[in-house]
Length: 487
Figure 1 (tube, rainbow, N blue to C red):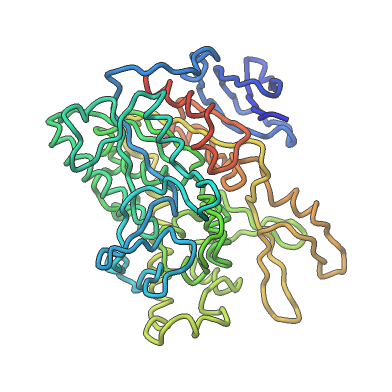
Figure 2 (figure 1 turned 60 degrees about the vertical axis):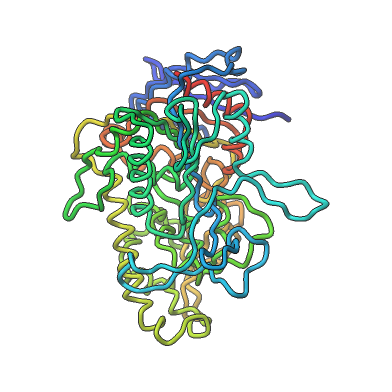
């Protein structure tokens, strides 16, 4: 069976139309707030205009290279950049086995800016070679090939962009995905400013194609430029928008992901954000040292955690006491003392409090609705048919006197002896998405559309039955994307 794509239109009578399989449909959508029946809630997109996509007929999917196109910046998602030891020049990430003389963990202290090691980003992960007798597994390579082929772009470098690096050129932005997203957004703006100076094009604007967490970096860069999170209530200045025109968000967890919590509890689920097989042993202790992961937690408005009766609990995920109360804190783990030195053990809680507060501030900054009119165009591209974990259940284990957090659906028995099937749990914990990011997170369904439009108005959207990583490898998505970049 071929790919299924869904499309929803709310016309003057608020009717919802679903079109057949194997057919790519883009059209004008306007939603006036009517509640869609639960089994058809693939998209709650209030007042989203799909004009740009509607203008592209199926015949236009074979994009002919054009000249004079605005330059593009490609930003990968979390784990999507290589990391090298700048002293030994050895690649540390991505490696199939964990290096003995290098650690993926960052140092920890309450001063997040000083928690640095010898690792530095060198490139985006284009592909992974598992063994000589197996084909290379593509990560971002196919997107690059598409841009160079049918897109008519050439790859430029930030240091040597070339004589015409201001047009028909794309640049990749690898970054240390463990570190603060604000820091990486500011690095991006600095790179853009230096590049524009080299090109002698002060008014040049770039388009951004951002995957997963890369979209959060792009949004912050547009909203605040080269500025830290303002004190008090953040007010977006849109200082970075002078450098940007269109921002394409592919599978970006704009309202966070429950998998970020799961990674902090169990470790390796971090790799859900970039599908790399045979992942090296990425543990919860590694995740604990990465501030960026906390910055992908769901907002309190978007967070859904149930009790055993599926009653939603009023939980503040950004309160450190919550992590202690529900046994989420890493220092409650039996392996904590083994994994961290005595000095690190003393610093663990102060570090975590600082990192969690930073994550809360980051979320607030991205939701600033008090700034000037939004001067960039946002397009969202996501999956709409995969069961995607979007909630959790808290269960009290009487024998262990311990809270169990169920994020991967499984059967359980309530305290009164009632058995809850895996299917019942799955129905509560999952929602349509790309298998990693739920559609409701991509479009920030947890707040009214008129509020979201004050900081992220959506100019167009495309949804297709694809996994999270395949959003950047799908030929259909690439051709539509290239057509929009050309406009």
